[in-house]
Image (tube, rainbow, N blue to C red; front, side):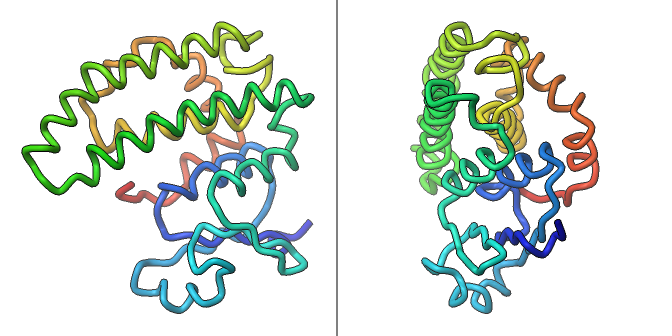
Length: 210
């Protein structure tokens, strides 16, 4: 399969495009990683089905928008979305739980422009919200995992990559959270770097602000 039969359009950022890139990397799947800056976006915007990105374009020209829809599709294609419907639902539960905390952080802390309010929200996030989130992920892992490295079953899924990417992005944006996770996620992080395809991608991907 040539790389040209699959195209991922997104800014030269990790943000909402990186999960799909990680899934494709783990699967060893070739694709065109089409990155652009904000000045170039007006050139691409009219070509995107909803005028937004990321967008995954298939060989026949079909475009799939929405970051998690794209990630779920490529995960299914790569056999990283569960062995059956129940396992897929468990994976989705982990993904949705992680998405909840991501949305809270970015909407109430990261993009908050009022510095006083931002400081208050950050305190709440670090002392309460994040603590409860880590506990919630721990409960799901205890219920669904058959291998300490993974959240569901006994092999790498796109939920693992979503949690991994979210942790990395959070630590990059807020270095003081690093100690909040303890050793709970160490087996997962070690598993990501033990995957040759992922390690190759992580070592070579462009360095971006977020």
